[in-house]
Image (cartoon, rainbow, N blue to C red; front, side, top):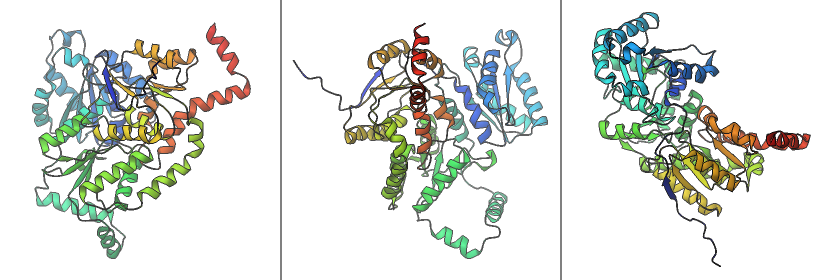
Amino acid sequence: MTAIQEPSALQFDCETGNYHTFCPISCVAWLYQKIEDSFFLVIGTKTCGYFLQNAMGVMIFAEPRYAMAELEEGDISAQLNDYNELKRLCLQIKRDRNPSVIVFIGTCTTEIIKMDLEGLAPKLEAEIGIPIVTARANGLDYAFTQGEDTVLASMVHKCPETVKHEEEKEERNAIQKLLTFGRKKEEVKHEESEYKDHPPLVLFGSVPDPIVTNLTLELKKQGVKISGWLPAKRFTELPVIEEGYYVAGVNPFLSRTATTLMRRRKCKLIGAPFPIGPDGTRAWIEKICSVLGVEPQGLEEREAKIWESLEDYIQLIRGKSVFFMGDNLLEISLARFLIRCGMTCPEIGIPYMDKRYQAAELALLEKTCQDMGVPVPKIIEKPDNYNQIQRIYELQPDLVITGMAHANPLEARGINTKWSVEFTFAQIHGFTNARDILELATRPLRRNTNLKELGWDKLVKESAKV
């Protein structure tokens, strides 16, 4: 009888070749709030409109700066003029909202009927006098969070290459003066002197303002100055990106943006793990510092303190198993963090895997498994959901992180689940937000513990049998 060897190196597989994820046009939900002077025009059918209404239901108190251009039978039969209709809508948007940029979001329908949005946009832009960014966010070619990737990749082309005119220089100087208004010159000079001399660094990835501030301050502690963020809060404040600039991503699903920055703008990509969890954040900062020639200070102590503060949550999941069905492309980073917390992970499903862009994250995942003495997960790209569910029944993991479609059926069969979409919308980056990841991950486990204490778990099992 031979002993079964646990896998010690990462294994990759691809099953169906299909995406089983949330629709990528949902990126509008967070991008329109992030870029405050933007307007998003989603060009699709009524189905897209119904989806957006449901996806945006949580944002009823936010002022909407997005709209649907609904394609009817006449459009699909090519009986109407696309250009004139889009021009009419853009003029209406300009009159009602006057945004700094209009973003055309292409859908499955625009792909199927071969609508040439990229060809229409430059002519429209010249005629209405507002920049237009065209992004393909269709569910045929892209998974859930890759909608943001297509928008940012298109936006790279709109980033200024240099501050060309004296007026623009004066405007930037005026903004700088406003930022330092009421502060002593000595304070401003001291702040500038805190930064080390290094090449310009631009970070890319749409994250909420508190995370932008948090990561900016973490790098400032190391003497690293961020030259800009893509996207910026306002389209008019997009960062200058020149040849030779260093760029680093904060999200694992931005491979297209990274490629565009390298190929079109000749930037140098810093291949680092992503700042999710204390371990990932430390590795991200260390890699940026090493590439820029800066000696990192105090990161070990910073990480150790965060781990200490998480111990109450870690006790709930230590020794338990987690299974990722695959939805938002955050799976590798989240699995690596949860394994570091003491969990095991037999399988990581992921809709799309760019091994080059996520190389540092994959290496850290492998090292984490070795350090924790647990088997390395099998990574399944474009998983077959039916086969996955059979494997879940066999493995009986303590927690399954899944898309919304499978959560209730699995719960009905006594398997704990957590919606992957919640990690997409939560603030999970940086040292201080590691607690929020564990708050989400442990919620189903804490709920079940409370049900057992109340004696309701037996009732739930009986109703599941019925």
